[in-house]
Amino acid sequence: MQKIHGVITVLLSITLIIAACKKDTTDGTDPTVNSSFDVIQSQILTKSCALAGCHASSSDATFAQHGLVLSPGVAYDNLVGKPSRNATAAGMNMPRVKPFDADNSLLFHKITCQSGHHSVNFGNRMPMGGGVLTKGQVEFIRQWIATGAEKSNAKVPMTVLDDKSACQPEVLPLAPPAANEGFQLRIEPFDIPKQFEREIFVRQNSPNNKIYVNRLVMRGGSNSHHFLVYTFRNNTGLPSVGQVRDIRNTDGSINLLTLAQMQNHVFFGGTQEADKEVILPAGVALMLPANTPLDLNAHYFNKTDMTLRGANYVNFYTIPASAVQNEARTIDFGNQDISVAAGERKTITKSWTFNTLTRVVLLTSHTHKMGEKFIIRISGGPRNGEVIYENTDWEHPLIKTFSTPILLQAGQGLTSEITYFNNTSKAVGFGLTSEDEMGIIFGYCY
Image (cartoon, rainbow, N blue to C red; front, top):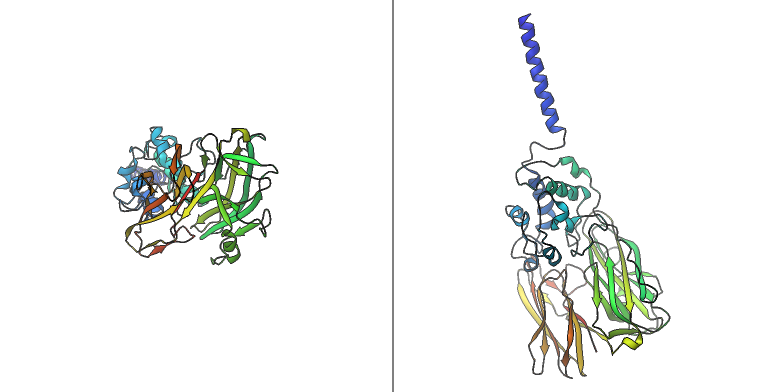
């Protein structure tokens, strides 16, 4: 009996050990994984963030903007408890990662796919460049932060990563202005096919009375490269109202008809950021005649194997004619003579002159991801060479308003001085995709 009792005791002990082991693994954690952060590094940061031109090293063209490297070995120390360079987050004393508090961690705000999650603008969602995280990846990071953002413990169940659906927030409708304050135009939701950059134009018309616009408020979806509004130089032979026109055919080739229509454009307003507003100084406004044809231009990139969705809204806010002291016109100075060799850092300058006395009241810039620094100088006259604009953040270009206008005589003008850093293995020149480059001064003057 004692021998049988001993065998039973041993068997019970083995059973308890097996049960305990099963309990340890059925919570979804993987005992072969060193830590939850190791998973984040190998499956998310290294694949989607620590890429050349983004967050791979301090040599990236964008490093001066964000100061964040997410490569293995340094990512953890650069994230947890570190202050944010993002202006909005810095103003709220929000670190990049605050242990136990995802809602007060900039990293989570930059990747969340919850529509309307935050009431302030933290800039473009990440990852940029067409990548999209899955809902499982975002939730894995949220739980890692919520459980303490530790470096060496595996607290987040691996099963969280099973949700492979795209983490793309719905574009929340933008409330239109009151009837006496302006009007709204929009591009209805549309698909961005997998592994494709889609840029479309949709013609609309302004209201049937002459108006003066001094403020634009825009909203778009994630993976938006830009959203612009154009008028037309010549109003004959225009595309139909509401017709969606693509700049690229489904095989990626250029749609020559749409390209030809672009030559008829006159810049009216817009930005690279999905959610942004542009405000002219008091008393300055853009005049739109009754029923002015307007072309809405949305550009999205999708470098995933999932179909994504885009949509855009723009509110035009107006002021009475009696409040207009100066009627504005637009500045659209673009340089197409861009060529940057592989591995090269290169500064390219170009100047433009005005043929009449001109007062500049607002300036902003446009480059793609290799644009490291964008400087605008005065060209000619006693202030020749003076820097009046500087931007080091291509994703969120500075919109600079001059309460005292920059006064330029006939024959004087503006010079763009743009530094590009091409840390890829191929030469880059001017082009229409996010992999090409541009260098444009946008602005307003009178």
